Each structure stands twice: as C-alpha cells, then as structure tokens.
Image (cartoon, rainbow, N blue to C red; front, side):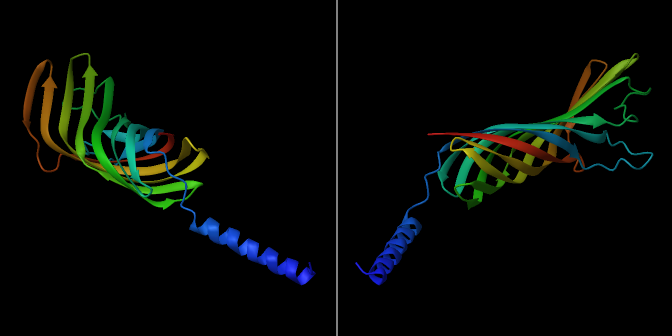
Length: 220
C-alpha cells in the first residue's frame, strides 16, 4: 500500500474515532447524592454602633448536610439541614439588666431545594441552588442574677453557588458559597423561667452567609 493511501486511511480513521467520541452520550451521573459541608459563616449585622443590639460579633462555624436525587444531568432536587454557631459580641446581653457571663447565638434551617448544574462535565460539576423551608434563630444569655433566651422561628430562603471536582466516580469535592434569609414569624422569649410567645415584627430577620468545603458521595 502506498504511503499516500496509508495517510488517507489514517486520517479517515482518526476522523471516524473523533466523530464517534463526540456523538457518544456523556457518562450517566449517579442519581443519589449525599453531601456534607463545613466552613466559616457569619451574619450581616450592624455591630459598629455603640447602641447596637446586634448579637453577632465575628465569624463562626457553619455546617451543612443533605441529599439530592439527580433526575437529569443538569438537574437535581433534594433537602438540606444547615446550622450556624456565631461568635457573640461582648456587649450583647439579651434582655438581662447586668452584663451576661455566658452567651450563645445560633441558627438552623431545614429546606427542600432544587439545583441546576450549569456545568456538567466528566471532571467537574458547577451548580446554582435555591430552596425554601423552615428555620430557627436562637439566642441565650446568662449571669448570676438570671437567664434569658429567645427563639425566632420562621421561614428560610437559602441560595448557593458551588463547584465540585470528581476525585472518583462516586466522590466529588469542592467549595460552595451560600447565603440565606430568615424571616421570623414568631418569637418565644423566656426570662427567668417565664415563657412568652408573640408574633414577630417585620424587622426581626437574619441574613447569614457561609463558605463551605463540600464532600459529595454519589450512588446508584
């Protein structure tokens, strides 16, 4: 066979291989996804004014756990449980008259969500996520004279963007930036053992953010 004919055959074979690779469907994503995320988190709060009653004073810890059903290469639905533990300002004392000696402030939500994987390649998945669910914000303050705690229950509106790289077919790892708005509907306050629940005012809300490292395990 002449060199020209060999070259022509090789070019034709290369073209057919490339064409078949492009025509081949992408690898099927495993449908069940379980994820765990951990990282820093905080809330948007006006803590610069001397008379501010903002309880949050610095970056705390955020954690997230959930699962999803990937019904399409570019889509999934699931549910997430997320929690924040915040650092508390030294000046915050709840409704106590004297400064508090022990303070805690945290928030949590449980929310169904939908994800859009706008990049779904063999090596990486990048996504946008949005949901709506129920949430709670809790503050506690204590001193030798008494104790105060408040629980703000309401509706949570979380959104997030993230990207995860495939370490193995069953495991992805990557960062996520998320935020959520907690809109309170009811406030229950306990002062020295006496509990009173009232309807929340319009300004009793929380806007929190987080930066997580997510580990996702896939099955199916």
